[in-house]
Every structure is written in C-alpha cells, then in structure tokens.
Length: 357
Image 1 (cartoon, rainbow, N blue to C red):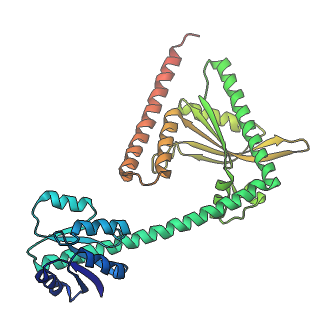
Image 2 (tube, rainbow, N blue to C red):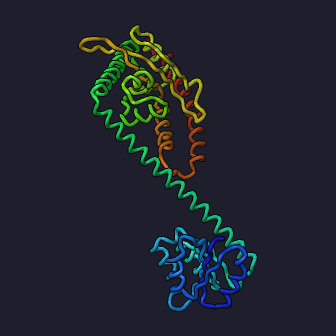
Image 3 (cartoon, rainbow, N blue to C red):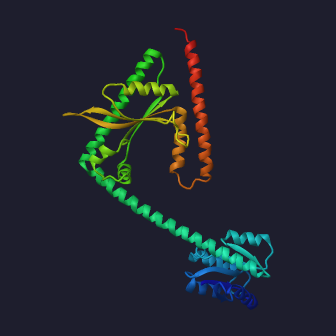
C-alpha cells in the first residue's frame, strides 16, 4: 500500500481523514509542519501524497510548501491542501506555489477519496513519464557522444579528407555547369532560369549518423557506395517551367549520369513539400585520374524554398506549441504557393508573348 501523510493540528481532522483513507493507503499523521517535514525526511521516497492544513502552530502549511520546494520534494510528492479557507485568493496562491489540489472542510468522504486517488495516479504517471524522458535524454546524450567521437575519427582520417575534397570539387563542377547555362539564357533570351544556387557538404556527424542508421559501417567505401547526399546543390528558380527546362538541359550533358529523379512537384509529399530532386554522378579531374562523384541537386521555386525553410524549423525545433495546427497551416500554404507559382508563370508567359521582337 502507498503511504499518505496527513498534516493537521486538529486531531479530529487527522483521525477523520485516516478513517477515510486507511483501506487504500498507509496513513501517517503529523500535528504540525515541523513533524511533517521530519516524517518526509524519513519517508519522502515512499510518500504518495501529502494532505496539508494551512493554519498550524510552529510551522504553517505555506512554510511546509516552501521547505518542500527547497528540498526538491514538491516535484515528487503531490500536495493536497485541506482547509476551511473560502477565499479564492488563498486557493490561487496555493496553486501558484505548486499545490496539486484543494479540499475544503468539512470533508466529504467520497470527494476526499476520489481526489486523493486521482492526484496520486496522475502524479505517478507524471513521474514515470519524467523518468522515461530522463532515460531517453541520457540515451540520446550517450549516442551523441558516440557520434561526436566517431565523427572526430573520420575528420582525422586522410582518406576521408580526400573524399570530402572530391565532393567539394563535384559541387563546384555542378555549379559551373549551371552558371554557364544561366549566362547563355541571359544572352539568348534576356532572362535567367534560376535566381540563386546554394550548396552544402554534410558534416562528419551527419555522415556517421546516417551510415549507422542505415546499417552501414563508417568507412570511406560505404560513404561512396551508400550515401547519395553528401554533396548537395539547391537551385532556386522563379517559375516551375524553369525548373524542368533547366533540369533537362543539365542532365542531357554527356558527362553527367542521372542515377535517380524524384519529382515532388508533380507528386508532392503529404506535408505539401514540392521540389525536383536529381541524384547524379559528375566527373572531377584530379592530377592523375578522372573519377565520378554523386551529388544531390534540388530544384525549387523561390516561394517553395521559403516554405521549406519554415517546415525545416518546425521539424527540428523541440517543444513547439500547437505543432499539429502549424503542420495543417503549412500544408494549406504549400497548396496556395503551388497555385501562385503557376499564376505568376502564366502572367510571365503573357508578358513574354506581348514583347516586341
């Protein structure tokens, strides 16, 4: 049976509450706050709840709550105030101090039993959840330490340095090809197919974490064979048809090998994400050889890039309030962005057709 501590300077109240609760709990009694603190020092790990009077000699209920907060007990033991006090201000003050419930005198047995049971059960669930979160946090902390250690080993390995240099070179090759196409369009058609290019190289931590998650070892060979997004290039276009035109011209170049094409514009993800993804191999020319390296190239419109940055923040930010509501709003925004992109494209086409040659 769980232990309940009843603290009241009136013996009749102590005995009355013991009679109501003794069938379900071991009931400890205290005449004032000082006795209550002494008993909690002995039994706080085993105490399921504290029924606490406010007006007592020597040490009143508010002083007991303050001592519990100081000792770190208030987050482990739920406090139910037992009082004849009718003032709303006092009740609010108790809740602000961390009290779980407020039971007014005179006592009604069924109300006392139900409130004590509900409070004990809720606190037990809360404590179990907190312990689970603590264990999960510790597990993640240890996992993060392992990733950091293994990533540091990767950083120090010469073959890994060589491979990262090759991926950086592959990114430069992709950017050069795209900029050449952009310059050609600017001269021939007086317009540019894209607005900007962004590139990134995965960190050693991200590389190691993804390899382990996919069941591979942290070796240079497994990085080359099994990861397609170590090197990434994002191309931001004004209009959807620019995306397809530019992607087709880019992949038709005879030294580019298209490995995979994922069209999330024609087939958006469930959250509304729209982008064209290409996994390619592109040659880089070293001092003694020509080798191919994989690059992930993403094409998206300006509006969808802005949307994706918000979605990314939601995905990786912890403890966001109303997350489900935000997900729904983002999906609505994504649908609106698609409609707007095509409306703007249609307007551009009308302007182009009206342009004198």
